[in-house]
Amino acid sequence: MGDSVFTTSISLLERLRSPGDQVAWAQFAAIYTPLLFYWAKRHGLQDSDAADLVQDVMATLVRTLPEFQYEQAKSFRAWLRTVTQNKWRERSRRLALPIEASANITDLIAEETREFWDKDYQTLLVARALEVMRAEFEQNTWQACWAVVVEQRSVAEVAQELGMTNGAVYVAKSRVLKRLREELAELWDEP
Image (cartoon, rainbow, N blue to C red; front, top):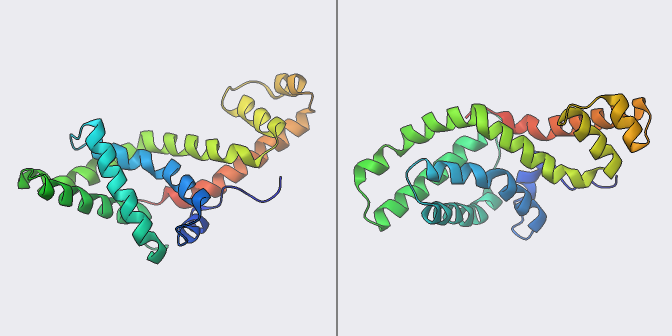
């Protein structure tokens, strides 16, 4: 299997201290861009405006994450939400949007984020993590886990199809799911 391409989120945040670590930034973007875009869209921005806001936030993160100190007692998403809120306010002032719209963003983000995080974003985050993690595993290991967990096929059927023993399929499933739990453990913090 070699060195892990996908690190835990604390390690990822540490790697982001180096703006030149393109793999870390790609992983970060794959995980958090959908949430940023979701927040932007929930505030009535058109796709192109939402994309501009996400780009502004990401540009800010490239500058600020090298200095960011993760504290386990605090939520990374709450900090990210604050960065997004501040960028939205700057954008609103720059475009002369009504002040009352920007005044409500804190409440809107908090309410909508809880609902989204509880349902859609957890699913999206798991899918993104799996997508990135796929490179860590041999093809048969990945396929065995995917077939049993996602496609809900029987272990015996998958083992026969992939030329594996039932035990090897269980081990493959266990390895991939263990790695997924490790990756996601730090991302399930409360907003």
